[in-house]
Amino acid sequence: MLGYLAATLVIVGLSALPTWGGQKGQPVPTGRQLIVVVCDGLTWSELKQLGEPVGRLLKKGAIGLLSGTSLELAGRKGVYVTLGIGKRASGHERALLGKWLRRHGKNFRLEGNGNLKAMVGNERIRHDRLSSPNILFVSVPPFRLSSTLKRLLASLPDEGCLWLVVPNSPQTDWLHRRLTPLILFGRSVPCGLLTSATTRRVGLVSSVDFAPTLLSQLGVKVPTEMTGRQMRIVAEGWQDEKARLAYLRWLDERSVRPLSTFLVLPRHEKRTKHIKPHRKTQHRTDKKRQRHFPLIPHRRSLLCLPSFVAAIIVAQ
Image (cartoon, rainbow, N blue to C red; front, side, top):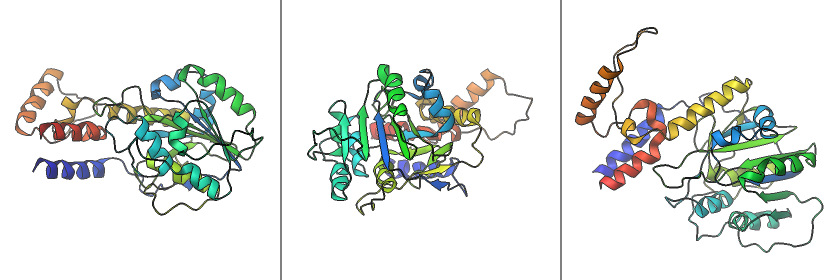
């Protein structure tokens, strides 16, 4: 019974979030050479504190937040595999991104630790130094991100694009994991917010959307077994940098809203712009509603759906 109730509330919650409406955006531009920088364990607030050249990417690139979904509650390696297979997967499965690239004559090179192999699969890696691979995958720790980006941006061609992908947040359990930053930068990339038909939310994409988008950028047909959709860029109405960053900060904060506030009914009283209810009165009213309706989510906390679903599972 609780399982059906949880599924119903999740559907209702998603329908109440701000949708992309008519702002479907434009396709992600193609590129002759792509650079994918993977930096694990970085939050949105930590990224903004790194300074240049991250500030340049945030100002002139297409940005968004990534929902690192997989078949594992703990994420980590499962998110890498999901990024490279285009559908929700677990850590013991094999990604097929490298296989699809080689099948269509696209070469790639890896720089960094073994997590990149989980993303491209067990495809045999060529050890010859390719002067200009179609895709360069680079894995870097957070403390080396700025210097690595400076080096890669200096060699980025005019027709190339650079991705900055953060697969996992520092906390990977469902009750504390966060949305992570995702940036696409290039001369042909308009500044705006990333979105996809998977999430249908401006500024939010899923890990299953990465592989289809990467293949489409190189002109490779997206395999039918992929469940993810190609990302798009919503530029109209999001040219102001401060507005984009403020919106993503709001989106990030709502994704980790405490579970206690997630299980509170919304207030139905009309409020004027200048009159606010007393904090103690509001707290007593919310606690009273929570006793009578313990499973109804607060409409301003609907982005914390993973925590809510986890609470339902624990309750069972």
